[in-house]
Length: 373
Ligand SMILES: N[C@@H](CCC(=O)N[C@@H](CS)C(=O)NCC(=O)O)C(=O)O
Picture 1: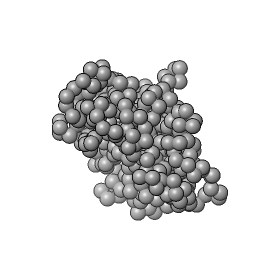
Picture 2 (picture 1 turned 90 degrees about the horizontal axis):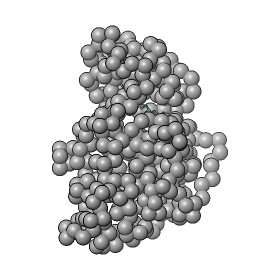
Picture 3 (picture 1 turned 90 degrees about the vertical axis):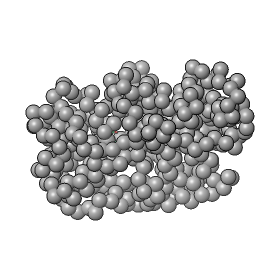
Picture 4 (picture 1 turned 45 degrees about the vertical axis):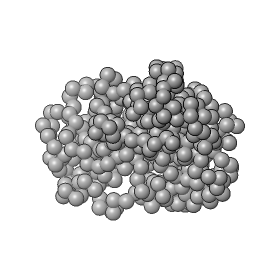
């Protein structure tokens, strides 16, 4: 489709007007919200910005090619998802999505750069053009997909919200948290879900929320709150930062659906397709048994889906506006979805997360790529 330029500008303006200040009620410091009943459970209605940032009315692919690298918005440090090492090199499954897009566009996963963003900052950074794609443990919800001038293109991690408490509390279920002080991050679905869950179950609560995750963990570790809540994946990751993780227990309830996935600016269909199919290529590769190690040999396979994905047959890259060996480059440089999962968050990493919902559909999970044909 070649109608992407006009809608990109139009949609962006609508999105910017609608979605600039997402979470007006929370500041950078702790915000104690003692069980107020002011919201209806929807995301806060965004206010219009004082002035609109100017974004060039050009295709993202053109801008990215001209610049020479893809700019991705990531977390400020969430091991397994997006985390820098001491040399400033980023890794994790969200980083892999960005590297996959760079491999698809440039044939070089290294042509990717990372901008750490808090939950509160992330949508504005995408709207304003500061980044090309948001790959930051971000939940796909209707409001975010429609009212912010953004489009979610897939789910790279199916998640849900969980709770952690100190073992000494003796609490076995979230239902025992009546009157609890709950620590979490501002600008997240987490806050909204806590409100839904506690209110609908008739439980009193108060929230202590911070913009930086490290502050949330520190507050919880220091005993400022009874429970720490975030995406279950975030609990696996953030609890590694606690003084002694054996003093804590994750409660059995998962209180929400948190499909985490990459988002792009609304209205640039070609760019959305490139990011979407970069993710799908990783999933499809796993289903077809293609890995970073065997991809080269698999090029001689007679299996038609393998030949199509590796660019031996067809013009699928061309249809996306990128080289035909796009998926081959992703698989050899980043790996298939399962390889990325195991390397970032899998059972042999400090996080130790089982595939669960993120297993392939053929193994009883939800990860599924439409056919490459
Ligand atoms: N998936 C939820 C929560 C995302 C979120 O921001 N989680 C926190 C806690 S795991 C986080 O990413 N912290 C790392 C950071 O702020 O950089 C959302 O999209 O609102």
